[in-house]
Length: 433
Image 1 (cartoon, rainbow, N blue to C red):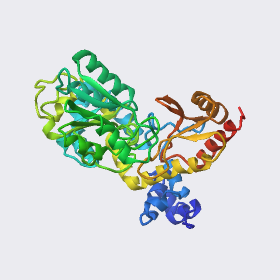
Image 2 (cartoon, one colour):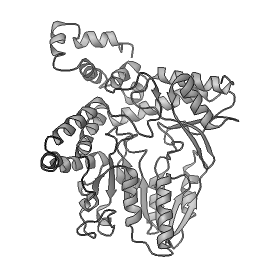
Image 3 (cartoon, rainbow, N blue to C red):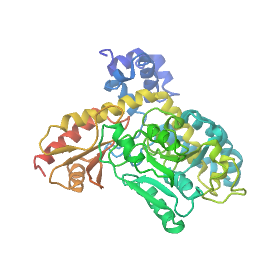
Image 4 (tube, rainbow, N blue to C red):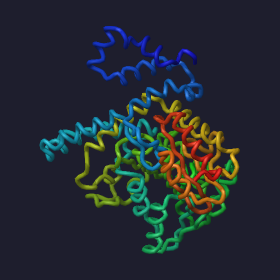
């Protein structure tokens, strides 16, 4: 799209006119420019818009990213856009004017509207959504709340997230359940293989299967719905860890086939740090015990999972602004941009000597996250080199046969940022350390 130049954007938007100067008094320039960029992009297909750097420049301006480092570890925890940060600060200040009044009588009154908005985003009923602090809290509510008996089997993967694995191990130690482990070879572009490795582990004693929608180590997308359907045919309940999938690419929670689902909202939704969500299928709520005691633990009210005591309501309520920002960009636009960025840098390093990729470049098997390593070198060495020499922040991975550094760009990441990453990987691979 040749007309996509910043100068033409600014001229067409009137920012160099008298009216533009006056309007700028009430609205920051970055915000007004972004509004106009979105209008100009309205009719451009998401896959074409993904590579239009001028458009994504205005998305970047909605963040307060560091000029000193290139943050490519958004998979750990992502920064919030300005509007979310400002909302948290504002509500924090309001709360401190009279905490017991403003927190409980004013700010917390937004919880039910927020619940509805989260449900709209998740494609489920509001009465199936509980607001939590992170995916670990949500999923451990499920893991410790399910009524399992000694000898019952749970199928899970050695590629799952450690917090979830440790929670199940604690139940095994305490309650005598049996954990049945699968260990898929990743990356994989064979959904039949990924389905079968789980279904072959099912037995008449299997009561639960846990599925990680996007494997945090390398970004592998699992065919969770196909596995869930096979599990339900055997009356096996399905727990889905959606920490790295929710708001990274579009889907609804019912699409996954999950009976229980947990996610962190401070990852790909870019909500404030310390926000998460639990989904429990309506008919499953009553039999699931809450992690924190409730007046009636066998109630079918989803709110029984929110008895966590005093918590930062200002963080919780800022989730709404993150949803608005996500909707503003558009789910398909975001998915296409993230996929484009992942493949942008991977395509430039895949043929370099000694460079090894640990993530698929095909649609449906990966999106934003990518794993890269250099033969004969430890992941920690590459991670340290990238940061010390190029100020590129990644995270090293050494887990169950997967080795490398995990690279996770976000919507504010530019291709120029990724060019620096590529240069760093090339120099390291050539022994430039």
